[in-house]
Length: 83
Length: 270
View 1 (cartoon, rainbow over the protein chains, first blue to last red):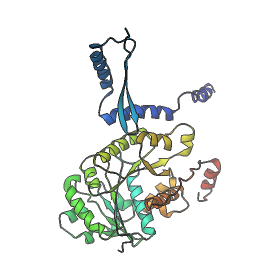
View 2 (view 1 turned 90 degrees about the horizontal axis):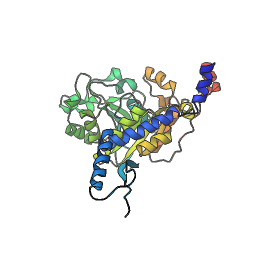
View 3 (view 1 turned 60 degrees about the horizontal axis):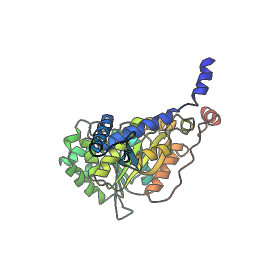
View 4 (view 1 turned 30 degrees about the vertical axis):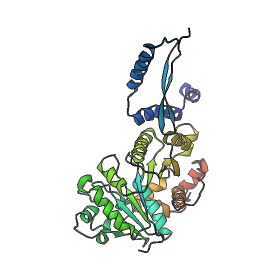
């Protein structure tokens, strides 16, 4: 009985369909550019280091892949410190 | 063999992943077009693992195969197997005891050129994978149908195949979603048509629902499109119309309800 109730309430959480979509979004982005998820970290580190060598960074820099149709782009947001 | 149209469509049916329904799609779309009087040939390039002859119920009529045609051991006309139901449908069988690289892309192109003289539609049944068999299959084609199932691994492979087709400058790539179960989509346990479109971003050719009748028709060697009461048949017939350039709306996919199940179990056609 408890299992049954748990099942009903669990359905409120993420469905397996949502989970499949999330996993696909990630894996397809990486497949399309032919890179692993480690690349993200490396890219972020190197890009931030390059920027930081020229200007001062303030806050948390963000580096993401964004997809538009079948194309992938790198979305970089680095907050810079004002004078 | 009388051509109905001056041009020929060479359509490769591919998927990356095996078992998603490529051969079933080829057999049904070809049969559907032949039924309408178009001259159609299906070319099985799954050399070493042929299935198309079995799906079409023509396994006992095979004499020569495509590798023998390529090697000049027989003529193309000798190797073509005539369908037992429709005089406008022919099959060029794969070789079962040979390998994918026993035929070259050039040889496939030459055979296709010869077929174009007699056929309105040439379907190429592509093997699973992205190796030589895939390259041979797309060599002569000017259209591609990518078959997938609403399932993560099939979608991932479909995406890879679409990427490869695009890098080979394919302009006409369409998606065929096979084995969709509407009741599972509704309960949040299966990827929906919209989900697949969002991931793969190509035009949708059609959706074939999961249908137990497909298993039965495959057992008999009769394409499901001939069983007009089945939902898969309706879906394939709609796709045939779309291949002919006609605008057909996606059919409403009915839930496998209690009443439908009861009717089926009582022996009514659904």
